[in-house]
Length: 209
Length: 128
Image (cartoon, rainbow over all chains, first blue to last red; front, side, top):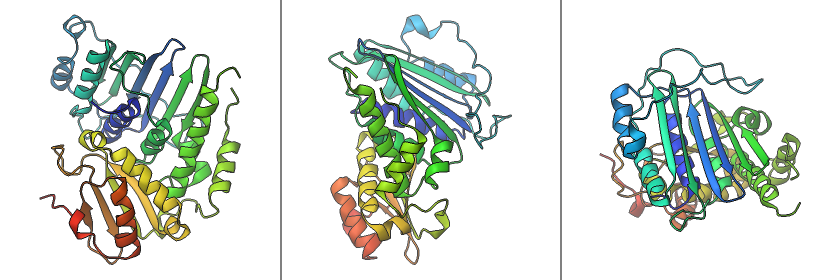
């Protein structure tokens, strides 16, 4: 298992980047009662049916054979984003890697739920939900670092990260950040982005404001 | 909640550094690539990323010369050995892969390899 939930987000986002995605959506929703739901979707290479079936073998038996919704319409990049809408077949094929087995182990230990859907050439969507107050749940960790890490990954993808706590939220869009900061592989730009998320996170988690 | 805006991001940018050069990856002479496969993350590669960011961001000269990027598993088969791994590609030097790069090793790589232009021999690993 990873040490923090932020590490899971980096790991699973890395899978989407490796899948040659144009658009990646990462959403972290935390309820006031401590439940955390993470949703990661991409328009990357996707998995073929055999690979997906192998991955879904990691699900609890009662969920394994549940009807699987197909991926929805291709993801749209953010309004005004320079990233073109998703298209056509992908050259790569997603293999699943070790990230999802790690996720399955996490959820199993925390009594949560997770699921994944994927279509070859269309993309992959997965979510997991855990009770962050569960004794086996890892801490959220350094989310600011995780977001900067994901935004600085190699590739021409757009990434829309959104974070909600109760009714409050903030978001960061890679293409918009790059318009302001320039090259997101430069340490100063990534450090500024990390600081932006850190401050946003501080505002979000302020009590009583 | 006071929601931060792009104007706030600009303020952070301006306050942190006057040296952020827009869209100028060509001007960089040293590229640090951090392996962020599952095994790398488990071994602390994200902390390694943070440490590189801090070291480079704190040095105005390095800000202009160094990029920091992330990639998946460098070995293509996450065996967990020698993680976190990083690659340093500096102009005029052989590309070098380092292993077991925890935050304390980052300072050495920055000072000895990137600034001093001398390979940190005891951290070098062979991926073959």
